[in-house]
Length: 498
Image 1 (cartoon, rainbow, N blue to C red):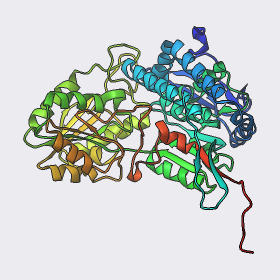
Image 2: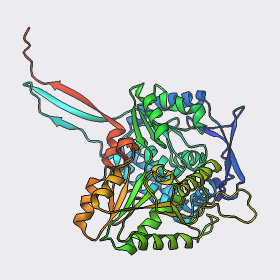
Image 3: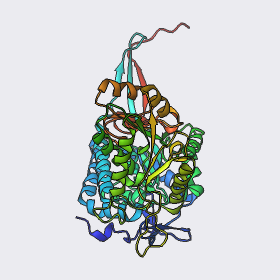
């Protein structure tokens, strides 16, 4: 196993990974990495510049040509070696996720499992880049369609599931024969970026093929998205920023691969198994403090079971242990930063002022010896409606607004009353009813008798409406990271009309 200090929070992360080299900060500004639970600075990393982004893209383009010519087993070996490294260092990586992103043990294990699944799937991609022969309308002609890497892929990743949401783009892109430039979120530059550089460096990534440029989105985001070199720009984040990224990428005819915001429903019908529905509602609302694009944003509950569901959900929420994410018993850890916390609390206050009832939570939890705690109590709001602040906005916190409905048609109407369409769930022991409602919800993903937080490496993942563009995972992401080339061979003399 790698020496623990190699991956510890204070293990010398104060560098950029440019073109295969660890570059000292020099005169660049610094980004402080704060533990969101203790509010202490645990590391600093350099703030990359637009020149760094340009250099990274240039080196990736240079290295990619020879990488694309490597046999498939070489590209598969790289991802497999990286996968082995992650497996050998699970505990150290889990500690990094806890310290930098406030991830509890349950969330860290789930993220590691999903990231490793993505890597396993990606390792198969070099052998799945198959072309085809096609018949020709011209006598004596042979048509060959080849599948090739696009060239260079830019990746802008978020802070909430930093390892997973970076790895799901980086590993497939490298496996498919591309070069990669990764800009992680400023809150999680280690687990979303520099950690991946170290993982793939240990795995033997060719020099220059992968670069990691930490930096503030306001300073280098436009350069990442609008640069002329990348042919695909993979972005995960909010809808407004994603739309700007798409516009910049499209300006260079690069493909925007976007996974954006969600406002996901958890529909509980009159025929639901309430115990199962509450179990799903608790997990789907409170995993990682609700900081997931696919978490439950609204609980839509049939009026005949509404009171019983609210009581059970509030009781369960009030019982969840809050506090230090490094404690194995903790379920609710800290929100990522003060701005996010303040927005969540404000949404709750506005929702109560609009007429909702605060069943439990709603406050910042006091933590001994920690000033200005970022731990928000798990919160349940009853008597909510679709137009209240905590329901119509993607609140991204441990908040569960519960909205009553009276018919399947109303449930579908309420579910679709949003600009988003990412994920959702429906509970009913009448599977015909569940499927009818699921089919009526305009969303990219929906889960019957479960909750919305699901991600499997071989199944297309993505949204509709303003929740994204394109799909990750399986054949879907492979198609986005590759392109086709038609080669025709005229094997017999062809007759031309002049």
